Image (tube, rainbow, N blue to C red; front, side, top):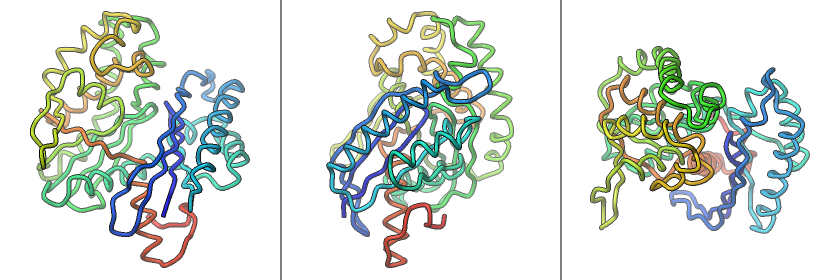
Length: 321
């Protein structure tokens, strides 16, 4: 069965097509994304501007053309923090659904965390023991922990790299003072999450997902042997912390020359590094491992699992959590 996931995030509109069957792993056939950075289009009132709505509609049109060419059995359309938290989110949802010709599933932060946790669990398997997940996106930062496929605790904080860049690090380069303000803000936002997760048993394995974390791992991390000759990428907190002052003092144009920092992440990478480092410190995480699977794979896995169990082809929005 060929399924598609349309992930309308704060940074990108990403269409992933994959072949999937009950009990099998998703095998990607097509991946197409439009870099949007919706946070750029937010008005002072927190609404997506008319220019932003048009850019969003254009990106969805492109994704729909890619999806149609894939001859999908089902397209699972989801949106995350930028759409759900916009003052005119209802208008944005209506435009997207008109372009797609189908409903849009707007995920809460906790749903994002749960679905990503499912993908991470399937990737690492039961032998990984208790997992702690950190997933930083453009609009929000998700956390989940547990020993099963459903996390015991899932949480979300409005600390996405795009959001924090707009709110705290508009200047290029931002400099030490603005970074310190962002760090203090992140500490305050993360304090209740750190308290909740601090009551849980210590994780056996700490995992990070998202493009920002993969970029930072390529910059400051190191590879380690994995299964069957594969490599794992590990990101140590100490190395990340030592890079933050350097990242904050060089302009964005120079950052994209660094290993792992792509042009579409160069403005946001400082905010991502500050928020991730703060979270790792407050959660007492010395090092994490990068997982290649994240939200989109979790959406696919949840759909095939639930639709197979129910023996029908219901819409994703109808599938219980």
